[in-house]
Image 1 (cartoon, rainbow, N blue to C red):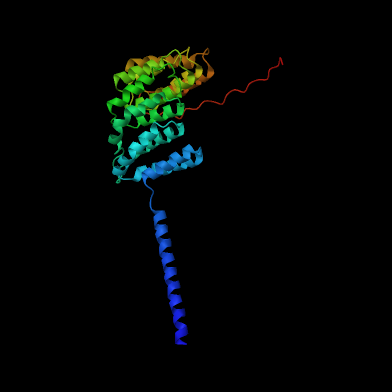
Image 2 (cartoon, rainbow, N blue to C red):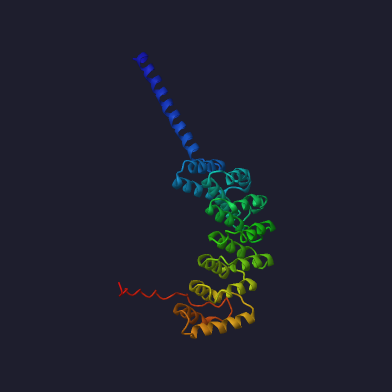
Length: 321
């Protein structure tokens, strides 16, 4: 009996060892699988998804990369930055877009203790010319994204940010959503700079301005945290015809947020009273003027009630039909 039991005991020990070895391998594999992916790996995944044309998966991959860029040590961000900048110049527009969005994530990151936003901005400053080059990208969305990246160099933007943004407003095709986006960035970065004020005022007065672009630009100026009286005076010049009704209403709606010189405020307030009282004026323009006059004291810190337009008058049926 003893001789017969020895092989059985030995076999049991081997089986037990095999089970333990399998469990150990499983634990090691699981630990490896749970190890956080490197920034380079996450970037490559974004590029692979984009190159495969899987926009949904690429979007999720970009979100994962952006989150990782926000949490990673600055040293790791520095290591992956050359690869991101190479992707910024990729021939695939989807790759260029995700790379520029990655730069936005880098700009928005904070120190680990959350006390300082933009700790990585010094790393990005030398790349401003390469980023600005995409203001003339064939893809309009990429142009807007590049403008957004340049606008992220706040609150102390380097001098190199301004020339390409200012130059864009002088382009033949600047009157567009990209142009109004650049106005938005400039009034956040440095509205008190004379070249910025001159460029924006000139842009507002272009003969080829469209209502949509002009309204977006006016709203961007009014909502800016810092105002420039010269720019705001340029906005007021759009109060009267031949500007379209929608533009005139936008100007009136934004008046309480502007900072105007005393003489300009007095003249504009008088003009607004004329508009409010004139039966020859468009009814919606008169409504806008009457809504703003009671609360407009030229103090942009004194709020006016929320401005809303009445519902449009329904069209009457054509009786001649």
